[in-house]
Length: 262
Image (cartoon, rainbow, N blue to C red; front, side, top):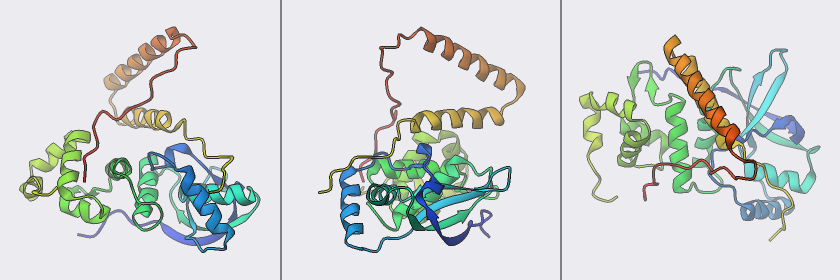
């Protein structure tokens, strides 16, 4: 069956760093490493060739291009630390519609980590999987791709691990797939399972941004009664938030599911 999700058109451009927006929600790695940025700074200083940064580009309501970084955060930071925002750098530009979901952009950026750069950690792989499913890249038309097909596209995650994560993170999808004999064989368990930095990107709002985005996505697809329920729950949350003293540090968002060892 032909893939219903066409790949974005890609071009090469030279852009000033100040033209590239850094949106924390688009950083798919769970954690950035200052040591890796320092290594890249040394390498750039020695004229080492690196792959271009990857940005998503869409036209704003006025028809002006907007560029957002989706892969190459460590490289971007190393370049910025060395030469500032006014320098021009080579970038790969993916042209996407303005209404492209944040999860689709996260997946497009996250899959680049399979090709180059710092190896993905287990939490990074879990985030890549989640972005893949939330962007609906696991479907061709109305058909769900099998766990083996998904594993082939994600390449570094065994299909047995994907099946476990699907049950934990996207149970409704797992149930829909489980009702089809095509997927049941995939559910069988496996037998084997230097340079001092002065700046780093501020990703402190990332989890909060994704939380808001997911609420809005649910609300968009809800009926009147469901939307009223969501609004009421948010009002209750706001009332609770207003009672918390300012000197209390809120608990960070945490992953309720432990990461599977590979």
